Image 1 (cartoon, rainbow, N blue to C red):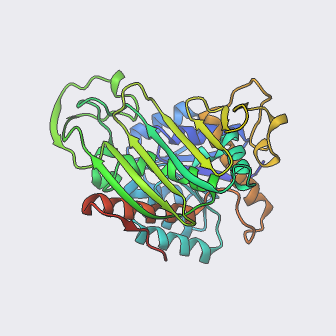
Image 2: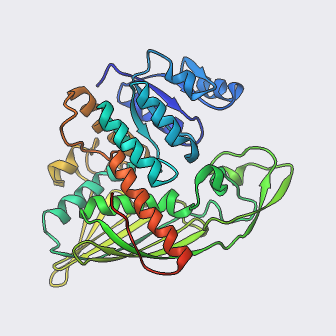
Image 3: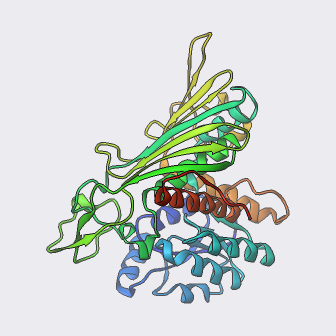
Length: 384
């Protein structure tokens, strides 16, 4: 697809997912960077990447790297994305784009000034059925949107001994469940409906106010398979759970629940969108299916099949009907859109992928959600 070469900053859970997806597209990964030379060397060996660095700055100085993928912890995103833009590199950044909206607007403006391609890794948009849902809603098939409702539930932080850097605000920010998974739900439903959140009312709960922090590092989503020799008690201030009421521009209403302590839910994003004529629903644990609900005739259950999808959705389905596509494929399809855009070379064209502006808008909504939870009231989402 492209003769550009990529550098990936971060080698934890999500960095290798980026590397794998890029390779499936034939895009070369020139180098990776991580915080400890011995660990990043081992990760590079496993991923078969020839060059590795123990700092982001060293990777950014590599003249072979044209595009930088940032998969480091949240606190580093702003500084690393800014440095990459200043070094003349295109940037693909994991969410959240920054720790706050003051940082993210700086990145939006800098990317525009430097005329560099910028993207946020909201990969859940790139299930084929996500694009099919977008086509159905925005073509008017369900009528005016009345209600947007759903949840994103996980169980990987259910026990007091479950640990990850996302539990520490200095690394992840002042919100956890909302910022980590709620941001995906909000981005996805905004993409599908085209509606912007205007105001929010949030309720947070930390069910485990004290956790047992292991004295040695553990990797994301692998806590139950790793046994720490020692633990220390650590107070937790970020939310295990949140429910957020949503008011959309145009009058639609919504509600989102997020949780990282829901036993049995490994990674379940669910939404239902109710319109004046019909409804649609999607379950991320069954990502190749779309429910379409009617009042006056039988409901429909659409299975992913390129022959049955709208053209905008069909381009993101690589396999025929009956051949399921899942989480790793969303990365591939997102990067396919990004690198097609880079190859085309017309950076004045409207991108067909989430950009820094989307990441900034998500942080604006997040600012309002956090303030609402703290002040126990409706809060209007700020506009630039």
